[in-house]
Length: 332
Ligand code: DOR
Ligand code: ZN
Image 1 (tube, helix red, strand yellow):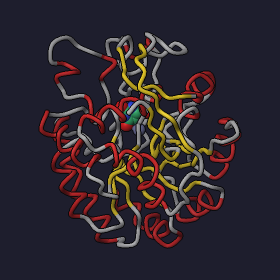
Image 2 (tube, rainbow, N blue to C red; image 1 turned 45 degrees about the vertical axis):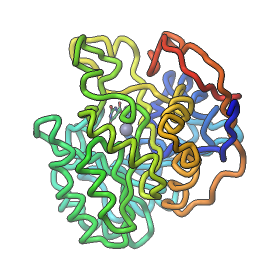
Image 3 (cartoon, rainbow, N blue to C red; image 1 turned 60 degrees about the vertical axis):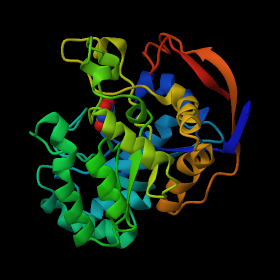
């Protein structure tokens, strides 16, 4: 097979940033995806209906691309502010436990404090997206340690739609498989490719450093199995997270991998290697839309089997797989 034509995909988790970086990275998302759920941990953050409207205007999406907006939950979020944000187009709210990642210093300390906010979200049909890691916990145990909180949320708010973002381990895959229909998960491309060895196994590779940390080969296998299984509970969220070269190659380097430029080509390779190409389009273009209750995209994306070398930098940012040869490319 030399060409792959699939329904235009959605990215259910992307960091577009603001200002100059936003302008530089946006085309890599819009060239492949018809829609993307845009994360609110920008500087300054997206917290209110006004912020949502301002950020949407700043993104100034080209025709054929729809940014799906989110707001960040903080101690200041109220049922009124969250409903107002929803009315102004924020389809989801993002829960960052305090300090777990980039710009999460104003994250949530105790989820129970947000009980009325979650109740309001459940009522109006707003999706809760969760960075599921427990603060102040050994880094490889953070995700598993947070599943208690997700259980509590799912039990307490049975109609609240919950997406556990960028999952990384076997425990979480099993948790999602056993959870109710209102709980799903996104999987990134880089967590299907990397293990901890690719971050610190020989040399320190700052461009592979991200949150949550990539884990063991068995964890990665569980993720590949989940993504290619055809289960509608797992869908694509790239978590493409650009940081400048200076921010990454630094004594206290930033977490995040700029994967947008290579996302669809790498997925084609992974699904093909698994002999599961028939589940690529559902994973990238159907299951997420169904979960969010949105129509599926109309257009198509074409991938061509044609080797290309990923540039060393794109607009000052080092992309995932920089300098490496990929076997599929997006026909733009
Ligand atoms: O590696 C990450 N980078 N993980 C996150 O959760 C946030 C992201 C970022 O914003 O840089
Ligand atoms: Zn993210």
